[in-house]
Length: 291
Length: 265
Image (cartoon, rainbow over all chains, first blue to last red; front, side, top):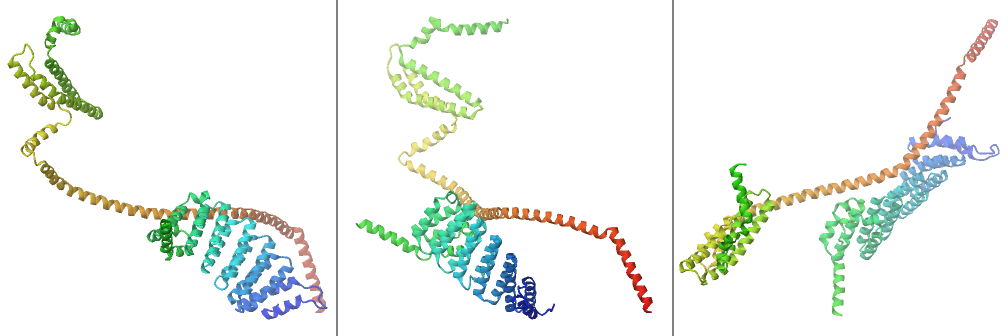
């Protein structure tokens, strides 16, 4: 057995091609050779070739009806693609790996694969990342493992915040709340609702924030929590246009327990629109008084 | 029975039946037509009962009852002081069968009454003396009443310097306590948050642990099976019969080799 990865690759390729002398492809041998070739390439830092070798190895494993190994190879291939910054391949490989995992009936690694993909693509292609996160969450929810989905929801919402799509971010927080409700994780649920309200306020959407607050108040767990009090303080401060109070609430310990991104938003909260809100309210009253 | 016993018994029996003694009653009521004398008699009895009560108060250990009794004494004193003017009016009235000396004597008695009433101790013993001390000053300057209040003010300033210091210290300590409590509350918030996060994390890991448990159980049973089979195989390999067969065959091979060697040499 030659130790030259190139030779191994060519040999393995020959094994898989159907010719007159070969009536059925020898996948097992080919797969072994592919794996060894990949290791050799990796050792010599030829990542492109290693990636190709891993792809083929994964195909071989698939042919041998071992989706688990196939998925593993796919993931390694995707990791190499990430190193090489070939982003669409990253997404594709991870998706394929996740599908193979689902074939094995293992939801957790499937969603993990999608999560890794999303994390890799966060900086570069945020929309794809969001799609991947959503798919990952769906896989977990279908399997009934909602608790694992919390982190994914949070990451997805932070991507939305970076994209400044606040309504979507808030929606994701509310989905987090739903998932938390299913698992009776009241602390995470309340934190999720408070984060949603803060996101709405940051997006200058006071009415939405209030609607959200009213909706959430119907949930017992939220009603009895610290986060509820903080939210009500924040909203009353907004309604009164009291900037000092807003700043105080934003620096309170309840807000400091939330996600980093949310804390940053909260610190910036009185975004100059508070006085506008107050003045609008004042104008309305004046008009009413005159008429 | 001793003589003393007899005497005391006689005394108590007499007292009991005094009310049937017509002569004595007539004597006591000799001033029955005289309203002044009646009222004065009533006053005297009331003053005496008040003095008795005051004596009881000094012996009383229970402060609540002492305070209650003092209050009663004060009430009685107030009532009596109210009725003194009535008595004075009666004193001036001329009654038949009364000499001018007796009239003057009555006036003096009535004038002495307020002093006697005030003298009954009622728990505020210093009061009458203080009012007596103040009385001359107010009497001497009745028109400038506020000055005495002004004098009060001096006294007040004297005290309020200390009390303001005290108040300042109290405020500072209160502020420090509030600061400390704020820090404690922040720490507690952080702890609560961490604790609930830990709780959720542990909840998350419970089903995972169950899965691990079952998988590891399966793995151990597989291992046990494999071990048993391996043991059997190794035993079979090492069985003495196979060994002997191996040795015999080895000897045969060596013999054949030696024979060939000999032949070829």
